[in-house]
Image (tube, rainbow, N blue to C red; front, side, top):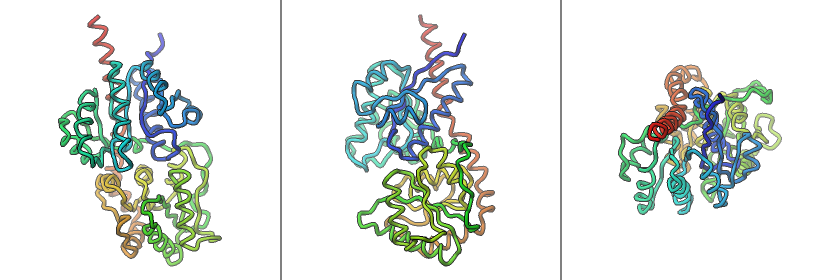
Length: 379
């Protein structure tokens, strides 16, 4: 007899070519595949995507359009359960519609009697208090809840969700590994230390990026460093990177590059792994780097950056509100000189996070198997 089949709908910010969110999806898909094999289950994912055709080509899975109600309903009705996550889905910093959308997807699955699972989500900020009761009512009916940091668990507790119901786990991307597809460039074409840089637009006046350009320009000129920009969210991050390069007067400089046309998250992970140090605004640029034992310098624009750095026993070197150029330069010097010491001091912690990143998939498959046994015994 063949393995049992479980169709699981995945709800998240997928199909928008954001490397961090796509890495979350790929990490969950791989973890479900691995844990399914251990449980004698063949998992057939159905991904709710902003671009279903692209998602199907990229990952070889079924996809439905996340904004077309009939496609969403059909996918959920055909499924054996729904996973919401990971990523920062329950937050209202980007608008008032985000939280109602993701809660509605979970609630729809619950209406159809499907088990629902929350997979390593980052919760907050939730500034509109009316959402507290909405989140509590929906989440309290989920079979499994996991969040990626203790701050998220504390926020759920404030909403009335008992702490013992919530498991704190790492971001799923900590468990991702690069693909071996021969597409990598040399670690350095200049022989210089490589500093990877992940930037994004945040402030309207771009003052934080201008300050960072000042810092990077001095690194390239005074420290003999190669600067490699790594755009995580296309096309916005590529434009932001090019702006910073312009403010650095980097046109034509052989020591300043931008990595282009890297779409697959495991390929971007490999690019990050070739750096000697990473300066990142994007959360998943920092997670990619840590998972590959690359020292990190975080520039905070959101509490989720600080929360991840705290798990590594670190603080952000700057923020979008305050960029201390001398302090960042000093931190770059310290980490490049002490790269091996940083790796050895963080190795055990990083290894623990990588190992624990698969826990949600293990729990979800176990719960689905238990549910199946209970139904058989009750029939």
